[in-house]
Length: 71
Image (cartoon, rainbow, N blue to C red; front, side):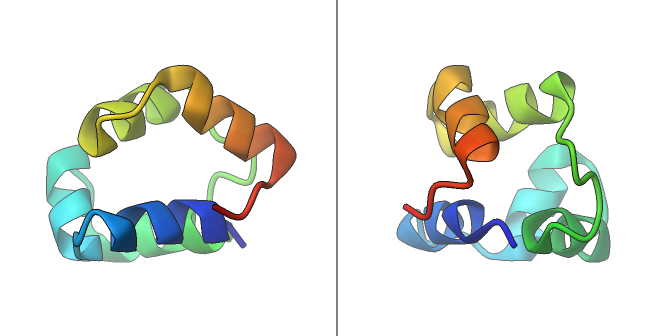
């Protein structure tokens, strides 16, 4: 489970639907990414997109992904 990703989304007051629209994917697809059921190894491309959506650095996304940090 990517609690750090869910927490980041909630901290920014964004819905899964809003994030999914920014990523140009379905809400269901984003939900699976956030839960860790899809893209167990996040691609750099997806990490870059998430960094842009959340306004954080790519290194922040990659470090949290690698370490499983719960923000």
